[in-house]
Image (cartoon, rainbow, N blue to C red; front, side, top):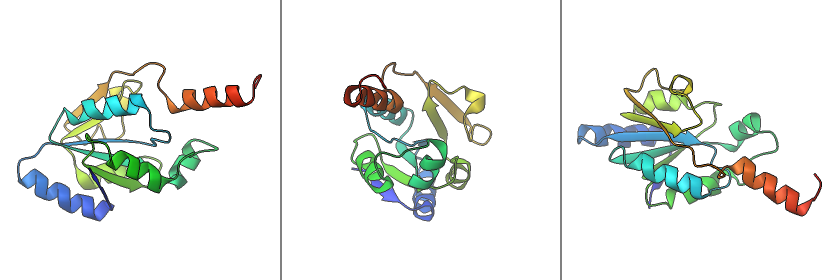
Length: 156
């Protein structure tokens, strides 16, 4: 089971791990409603290194980026992610992008889902290895919410 760390705690842990020769992988997102696409993506991301750190948008930034959300609060989202086998550490961030978090952690590998072009991935200018993993069709939080709304409110 992973740990939920503050930004400062994460920086210290990462520094120690890197000194020990570990390859650090970083990814980020809202992870508002955890689904199989997330689980597969995180497992694949973990396979690109030794330690996976997941930056999670705090409620304040999710609200700015996705009106009407989050559905699940930041503490629960962080705890659910930390409980996954592939995830070693979870760090919340309140900015709209994880750039400052990435800059403070300086991971070896940066990973995003396949719907992101490399040049659009935040932090790709400072992290040496960047991957855009294949998108798993039909598995998005937005799509799940849409299906729920249609079932609860037909015709909407």
